[in-house]
Length: 133
Image 1 (cartoon, rainbow, N blue to C red):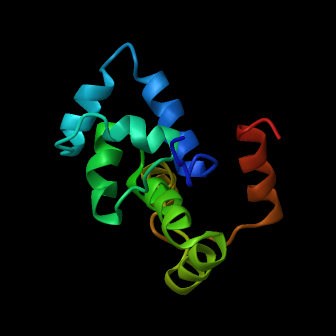
Image 2: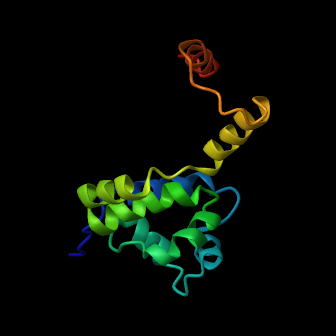
């Protein structure tokens, strides 16, 4: 019987989903190689939850999975130290900003000429309308 202590982790589920989404572009072995894993089975082990993702591997795996490294780090922290401790780390260092969110922030700064606009109820309503909410 193989022990898979991290099978239910959000990271395992996310890696599994991303590998499936990238299936037409690259193989698991290619993803493993791009991430710098010597053992190509490492991706399978991460997907199945039989091993944790080492935190120092987050940036290279994020690049190989074509995903945001801040988001993947959050999942890896949850897997490494547990949800409560990961939340404490996030509270201490602040919520990570994804590359997509940073793009929105830069667009807001450009649109407002760097004036640090306050989020009014009107602006919030407009933002929600963009997302159909």
